[in-house]
Length: 267
Image (cartoon, rainbow, N blue to C red; front, side):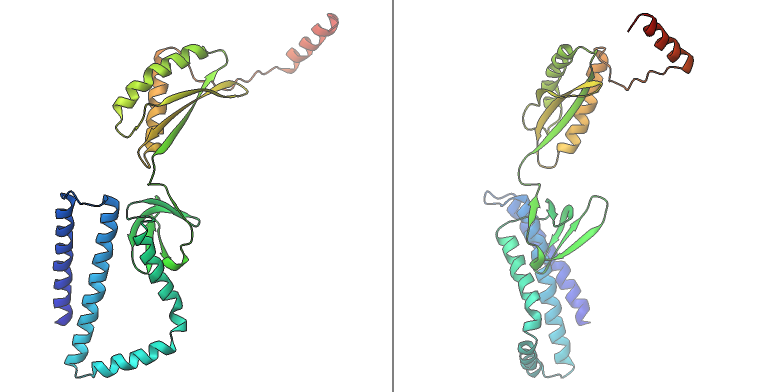
């Protein structure tokens, strides 16, 4: 019965916390959405821990167990295992600084060690990130020493376009430059007008032009795909085709005739 009441209290408490954050979202003093999501998850976790702890103490009291003596004994045992609990203390302290310093928030796309993914939850002890393929990685906060946050600043979409050597490079640059302002107005994720940098590389069978576009955080992959599609369509409309490998084959007889012909000519 006590745990049933505790579950109800947790549900009501979480609903109240969410309503408080909804009211704050309309306030002039609201904090960033990233930080709101992080604090919301954290407060829900703290509420759950506190309610279940109180429920456990209540059950022990109902069973006529000396809670005060148990807590005093737990304090002595705590001193005995204090050295073994150093990692737990380190995790909690690290979790506090992660949240206080706003190193990353729920919903951010981050890299921790060899893992990259979206932050699902930040607790006082652990942090959870989910990779784009679905794996959930759980890190003790004390072991998070280096973090790369990809969601703080704007991203850059980089698109390379290959034009054959027999294609009209000047015309290709012109039609692409005319296209870019229209693309900028079409996609709201683009922050500034895309820019054609010019010739990026001379390949074996083609010339590479590079286009860049500043986008909202983590929108560069989507915008890069859109740019490739838009540029491909406008190049096709203007008769500029994509390069493809060319293979010249000779039969043995043709190769011999070719060789004898050059010998007779003294080449």
